[in-house]
Image 1 (cartoon, rainbow, N blue to C red):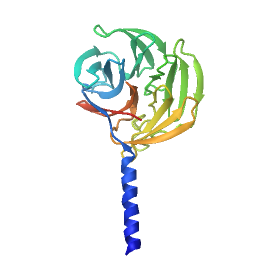
Image 2 (image 1 turned 180 degrees about the vertical axis):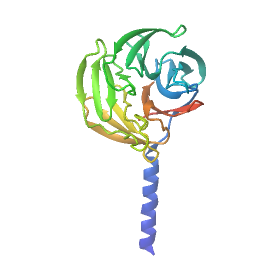
Image 3 (image 1 turned 135 degrees about the vertical axis):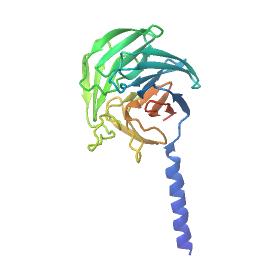
Image 4 (image 1 turned 135 degrees about the horizontal axis):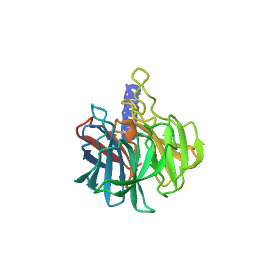
Length: 254
């Protein structure tokens, strides 16, 4: 009887331990992407900015950027109708927002209100589904594609190096939507590089140092849209895709 009780106690403790390892979000933001999908999030330290991605049923881009307070309250939407975006990031060096699009162009946003942009890089990488990330130091662009991480000099777009062998959520071969589970997503903070697997039975984020050495795996509670892995305001974000309605962004302190 004592042996059975001990086994039960050990099992109960193990379950508590495993449950405790699932990280819950510190921030949740409701985000309406229009008729397309939630794509990416960034912050300038004062506000959050999200971008949508994809096209409407007629194949037209319906790009927009939403602005929120740091507590997640909606402020305003800005139209970028002709752009099918995949990521948005803030450069603290020049105090500007940037966006990367499906046609592999990277734009500097000169004015949010008017939607004025300036093209700075074009087709320096090969997969339009990739969500480009910028290192917080403003010097390096990161592009992840199925375990291969390319690093480009932000200033001129030249390739610095490629790191291979990163873990990610593999695409579904029976319904191949490239990037749906994280094969084209990457987030970067001051110390680490992050990839993830958004499959419903996984939801794991993988951390690497800046040399590409594996550091740790984190299991998170929410988020299902592989493209959305982002770094903003000291947190790593993922999203539950709104699929043309209201999506949810989740911010984790890892």
